[in-house]
Length: 120
Image (cartoon, rainbow, N blue to C red; front, side, top):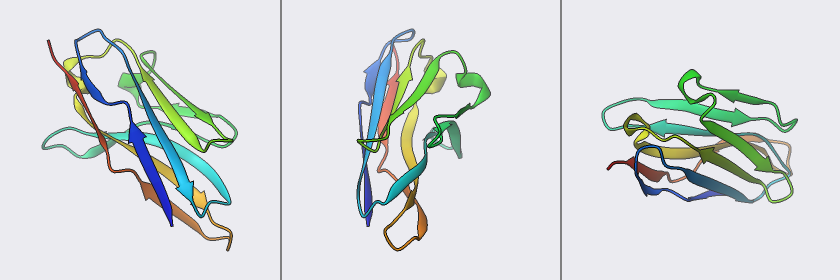
């Protein structure tokens, strides 16, 4: 099994910054794509950003220029630096990872979510 543990959420004022972290552990041969998604109350879970094993990145349009995704391949950890936060960024942020185990099986895993609240 694989566990994803997120940290770094909290309450921040508009225009502020937060850095989320997500560490993967368990039966991991290799972590391929890692990413962040978010879900606001009453809405679907949406893509924020992803980063592949070759460090190529993909962002949702509204996050470009404000958010930066990065990863530490040795630590199997993905980060999300969020700057210029807005009220509409308030959501539960979920980490996601595509993992290959030692048997060669690929599976997608989710973290438990971390709350980000942008409010004055």
